[in-house]
Length: 396
Image (cartoon, one colour):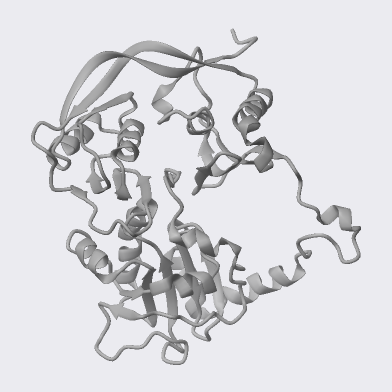
């Protein structure tokens, strides 16, 4: 089943490691630089000498990462299944212990938890997006790097049997080298001034970032991409005269800083050209959900205490997480989940943390979560808001 793309409302600390080289199957695993181990026996050490002979599943995650949290039941099931085998699950996070302890009071993680203060282990393993799973075999070699939903009992059995690494390493050795060929003209190595790439993809996990002059999105639904590019809070404000294809895309675009005023119009024009629609922003009266806070806020909406930390927002099926963010980010996620435009009349300001759980696809469950977990009132009204209208020339 296709997972919902993680929506990054702000750059996560792990993105600083995107310049690092990812691990290579068959090579020795980088050392672990963990400041502390939680849920491990007293005196336990996480290094490859002490773990020799054990298959290690490293799960790079965070409490604010929706897909990470959504993958926990699957990982817990595998951890229990291999509990009496030489397999060790270690969930690696760069968050502080207080935040992890608070998380564990609500959700279980089967296995050790490694605190990677400063992100040295994330950097060593080239981890940019979360979640990411890296399997190390009993000889301390990288056996796989994949998404947690791709981890199976059969794969772990193959790693235990020693048959999972050799084939991958041979394939990697046979692959052609990346980048310009040695001796290539210098002109082929220059960075383009303007880049726009739009392509459909079958990828499962992804995310997006956009600023005043660049955009990078992977495995993003077309409707989500349109909301992003036209600056709308969510796809709920995209209307079309015909069904919008449920296709995922990879999008990469950038312009020089001197041309950043032209970036959005240029990207919008490229999308129209590539996909064959015409888009315009207009104001329409639509049915909207209005949120208010007559009694303040509830147990799962908390004023952030650590304003010096980074800001994160992430969603997955039935989970909406946020840390150290303004309510506009929460409202956008609730709007995505409910499928209707949402109006914020709470009057609440400042930075907040939130943790919302509901039944995916069940609007009544979402409304209940908003009322009980966030402590907000919900009403439906007709409101005039800005929407993106799509027309498809030649459509019947």
